[in-house]
Length: 135
Image (cartoon, rainbow, N blue to C red):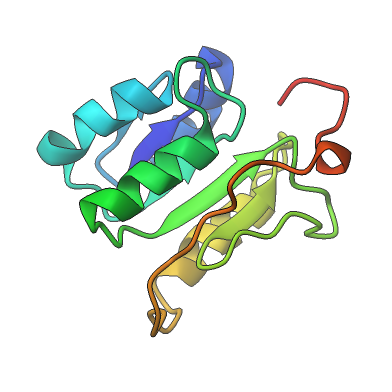
């Protein structure tokens, strides 16, 4: 599992949750995560959207350009409790200390049917979808 979040506290929380299930690799931003991909070969990526240097959406587009179909679970403050954040082909979970929804989304990536068409990532976040608090 590749965990991509700029906050070490969140990375630590995710690591504690998944350390018994996955070999973990961490990255603090999208550029670092791209550098880790070839070495880590993760089975799943847990990705924040608001990242320094290369944000989560740009990271997703880079995955697409590389032709990688690694399952991604976005865990971000941009994801509402009712699942109001949607990116085609990507699971999403709200960024809360209660990791049940994140765990369920990760588990679903291994039972989901692979997409039949290539992923297309949004060009940018719509201004109304970005809450005022940091992710």
